[in-house]
Length: 248
Image (tube, rainbow, N blue to C red; front, side, top):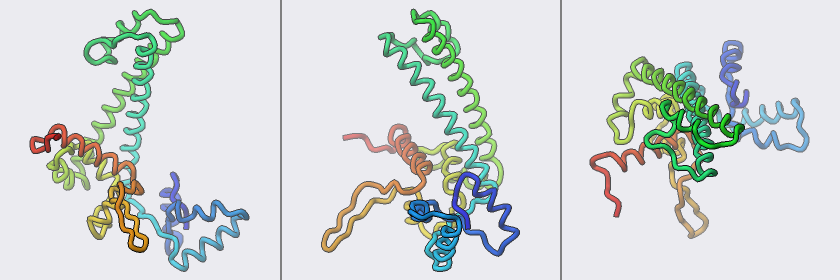
């Protein structure tokens, strides 16, 4: 048995042909062991073995290779987007500090570079602006390459049979559909729609005690990437779908 970490799938592939079964444990299931006051490898092994024999350690689903690769590409693209957003925020911060309105149109486009460099800024800050502009444009090109690869994968097995169904839903495009498929993996592993909702952390929280029974907000205890795509798609549908509900 091993814990789900960044290298778990590599270890799983190496161990699987050598033993009868490899169980990948959810990190929350071994948190109690990590917090133990007396912690040694031998003690941890005994505790894990006893819990595993009693079926007290829930195993996580081991994704096939194509799902792993898609998840890695989606994660890479999301990381690039985050870095581009950070560069854009730093540039906006320069304008706020100096009380300068941004240039018309797309403020970080290539043709706006001269406008930024003509700002009356200290030399060190001008250097940071120049590098953030270059970084923004570089990241933008890398994001486009990543999204082009996701688009290509959407036309290949096993995703080509699933994407056409998803893009018919309001708020979903090819990119968001691929992000959904990466997070879900094989949808047939969920016995019902409620299980998938729970996996996404979109189910309402419930508090029941005695005669008290009240619901709350969504649990947010599932995959944050899956939940994020669904929320983004919902906002796109609200803003752009012809059958959207008009605000009161």
